[in-house]
Image (tube, rainbow, N blue to C red; front, side, top):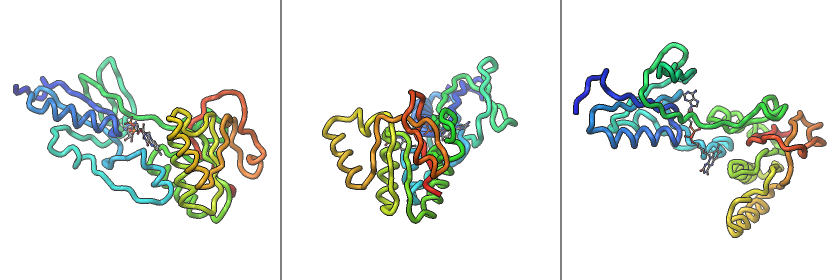
Length: 243
Ligand SMILES: Cc1cc2nc3c(=O)[nH]c(=O)nc-3n(C[C@H](O)[C@H](O)[C@H](O)COP(=O)(O)OP(=O)(O)OC[C@H]3O[C@@H](n4cnc5c(N)ncnc54)[C@H](O)[C@@H]3O)c2cc1C
């Protein structure tokens, strides 16, 4: 069926992370022959960010670059480079970079999630995150300039575990401490958890579980401070090493 541009059903996919990119590619591929549906993917960069490799970026390793328009090539999906600043569900429009407006019939919201840096005082000022490539690069730069000291990884979920292990492996001269409410790998099968515990021990990562990050201070006071407190949301975050 051939439809004019005005008749086409517009599917707008926001965010070209794992969710958005695969949704756009698969939807475009499956509906391509119909001709009455158009898929457009919106992302601020034209390079795909493999978030689950950001701990590698943070330790100075290079990862493969994937160009989003090239990945979409041949699928029929379009690409718009820009930052989504507003969604208006009433008019079914999305504002891009405050100066462009895109219309949609169906919206796929795949803007991902980032570490909450405001829930715990001091995080914004003194911690690093792995929210994106730039954040990971900042941490990488900091780590390369250290010749000793302690790196505290806040959050003992899989991202924290991966980051702590990677930093300990790449920088054996640094002491790495992994803090969190739960034990690393708490939800894993006991055999997998035992493997994880053994790997962290072998790398010299000091694990402190059952703790709550209540505040992040500058060193050296923070070394005396409070990691244990009342329950509050704790996101993955890094306290900068000793300065
Ligand atoms: C270091 C690290 C290691 C991880 N390891 C694993 C793992 O081993 N296994 C696993 O399953 N998960 C892992 N994760 C989690 C995994 O990366 C996330 O679950 C996954 O990235 C979520 O995919 P997503 O597509 O929803 O969002 P994202 O991958 O975050 O993608 C969101 C996209 O939206 C874009 N975007 C954001 N805001 C805007 C805006 N306003 N306008 C336009 N675009 C915007 C972003 O630039 C990005 O391209 C890890 C995460 C990290 C940080």
